[in-house]
Amino acid sequence: MITYILRRILSSIPVLLGILFVTFALARMIPGDPCRAILGEKATDAVCDEFIHRHGLDRPIPVQFAVYLDEVLHGDFGDSLKYGKPVTDLMIERLPTTLELTLSAMTFSIIVGIPMGIISAVRHNSVIDVITMMIANIGVSMPVFWLGLMLAYIFAVGLKGTIFQLPPSGRLSPGMMPDPFYEVWGLEVASKGLVGVFEFISRMNVLNAILIGRLDVLWDAIKHLILPAMAVGTIPLALIARMTRSSMLDVLGQDYVRTARAKGLPRRKVVLKHALRNALLPLVTIIGLSLGSFLGGAVLTETIFGLSGVGRILFDAITSRDYGIVQSFTVVIAIFFVLLNLIVDISYVYLDPRVRLE
Image (cartoon, rainbow, N blue to C red; front, side):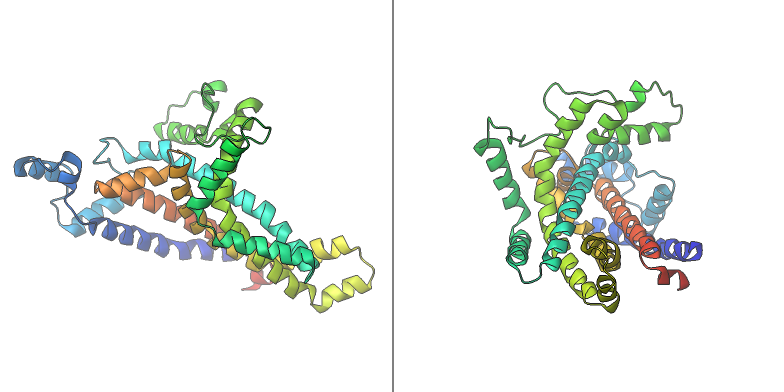
C-alpha cells in the first residue's frame, strides 16, 4: 500500500510542473499592457518603462519563468502589481472564503446526493425513483447564477420574518467579530510562516468558531453558508445522485448480493454494507472530478452573495493584467485539485483491496 501511495505522489510532480508552466504561459498571453491597465492610459512611456523594469517584465521569458519557478518552490508568490502587497497576504485574505464555500457545497452534495441515489436504486422504477431522478435532472439544468438569485429571493425576501429566513449576503452578521483562535488560546508564534497558517485557518469562520467554542458564531456562519452552498452544490449533487443510482443498480444485481439476501441478512445491511461499499469506487471518482464544478460555481456564487473570495480578485487581476495574482491563485487552486484527486486515488486502496496488488 505504501508503494502505491508513493507512486501516486511521484506521478503528481510532473502534473504540478506542467500546471506551473501552462499558468505562466497563459498569464503572459493576456492581451494588453499591464502598466497602462494599472496606472491608467495617461501613463507616459518613461513611467511605464520604469514600472516594467521594476517588476522584471523586461527580462527574457525563460528568465522570468526560472525566477517564478524558484520563488514558487520557496513559497514566495511575489507581489501584486495592482495592490502593491505580497500575493501570499491576498491568499490568506481571500482563499479561506472560497475554500470554506467549496467544502460546504461538497458536504451538502454528498450528504444529500448519495442517499437520493440509494433510495432511487432500491426503489427502482417506482414513483420515488422517478421523482428523485426528475429532481436530479432539474438540478443539472439550472445555471448557478440563476439558482443563486432565486434562493436569495425566496429565503431572504419571500420567507422574511419566518424561521426559514436566511441571510442573502456576507459571511457573518454585523457586529459578529470573533477573535482568532490563536489569540483566544494565547499562542505566541515567532515563525512568520506559521502565523500565516494560523491566520488562514482563523479566516474560515466555521472552523474558527469551533476552535474558540463560540456556538453563536458557528450558527451564524452556517446560516450565511447555506444559500451559497446550495447554489454551488446543486449541479454536483444531481451528478452524484445519478451516479450513485447507476452504481447501486449494477451492484444490487450481482450474485453475492442475491446470496446475502438468500441467507436472510437484513435488507439495510445488504444495501449499506455489501452493496454501497462496492458502489463507492466510481462514485468517489466522480466526486473528485466534480471539484472543478465546485470551484467554478464558487467563483460565480461569490459575486451573487457578496463574498470576497477568489472569484472577485481573479476577475480584477485579469482585467488589470496583474500576472502575480493570476498565476498564483490559479496554481494554488490547481494544486488543491491535484491533491484532492490524489486523496481519491489513495482512497481506492481502502475501498478496493485489489488495488494493493497493483
